[in-house]
View 1: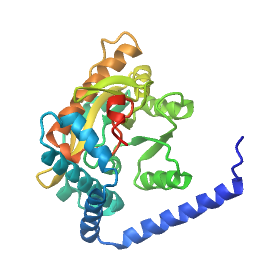
View 2: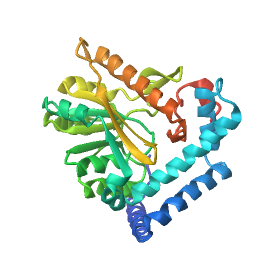
View 3: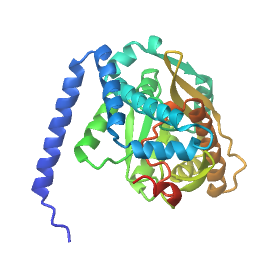
View 4: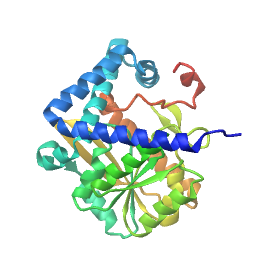
Length: 311
């Protein structure tokens, strides 16, 4: 039986919302040249204090441990923290990022996106937690594209509200889902967007549990969300991959060519074609920029021999 007091929950939500708005207001007052080193420093401190460090080192050892010495793994781990701190500073200052987009960003492969949009069936962009994977949402909208970003519900209702407002403020729509399966409301919104020929962006690399699609990442089984394959197959949408990473002083928005699943006879076959190719492309990019991947999440939570080491 649930004895949660509705009044207490409402007060908690209002308080959390107030604190988040206060935080955003304070961040808005700090110039980006100050905020960037501040956030990178806080991220470095988090690593030194051991916050989620065991998870990060476990992931890196599982992925690269046989090829890379421990000193190098620790260096990659620290880079991952610092990159995340840098990304948070960039996300907190979208006006600065958009206002200086020529200086900060380089877009590659935009012809792939335009070519698929011309087909009129909608485009699913599969991406992952590498580099600044969030800033691209409002940047694409600033380029004139209609973008729908799919995101799982956060535990905090107040955080959910602020997250939605943040994206909508810069022209992107946020489709909140409870999971990548068995969410008829979220699924219907995704299908409608694709039927209208719009873009749907999905970060599809977190552990989805045994019900997810079993793919491979750095030679290990990984269970990633399988729901997107159903939306793609039903709507006959195009699928491309996109990764945002730092290179030569700029954030590169790399749009890759389409994943051809036209020979799939059913959704299961489409799922295998799409997600195996997606995982392969993501792994290639992470190998190129290992210090920019978000190793802080429990990538192999459903794999006992790795998850038992997370602590």
